[in-house]
Picture 1 (cartoon, rainbow, N blue to C red):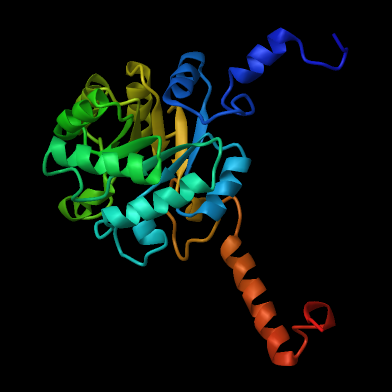
Picture 2 (cartoon, one colour; picture 1 turned 45 degrees about the vertical axis):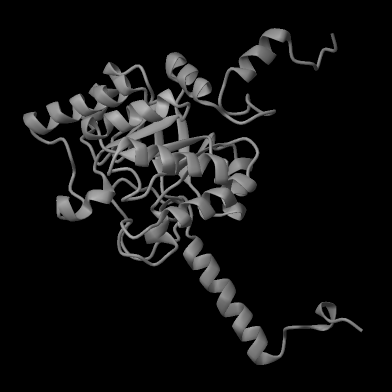
Length: 289
């Protein structure tokens, strides 16, 4: 063996990790389950188009979520509620086309699964058949367990979402932290166990006290994905426009901004406009003859 070549043991260790290990196929629910068993934390970002999804895929993000947060981030809605199935199919298909390795999870939007498990199955099948996603996500704990069970029995991987559920913004009266107080904490634990029992492969915990999220993570065999759930969940997810500093105004307390792309794009646009006004663009090197 060449001295610079990795040993079989090193190769095995590399392929056993989510970061840098899975290179010849997409990340699967089995990879995430294995990561939970060995205590490897992983990241998830939202994506809504092929271009940015490709950037995140190349960066090694193992899971990308085509969230109905596109309603707030890209479609100009005040909430996620107006987002339609047709919009989710279009956005999800673009993300799938722009990626090679990341597992793609797509949200079932408001009104696409609450009516019945059969409705959930119909729309989940659309996302898998028409967009090519690897899994779907839906909100709700005990109230969504029957739909999760039907989807999983039909071969649809399901990521659950409990705690703060943005599709219920009108019922909740905003976006308050969930699970505070004994009764609310016990309900969240029941919800978490219900979605695991129904067959969900992971569960998002949004805007939940860190101590409660840690307790849920310890009690569940499936991975927990935190967004405002403290440091002890198995994974973390952020809306990419929040993470990269594209969002205007205040961002939620749980967001860390890793760049200021809004300022970068604004500066680029202003420089372009100034060059056009002043005649500096297009220059000779940008012209055909």
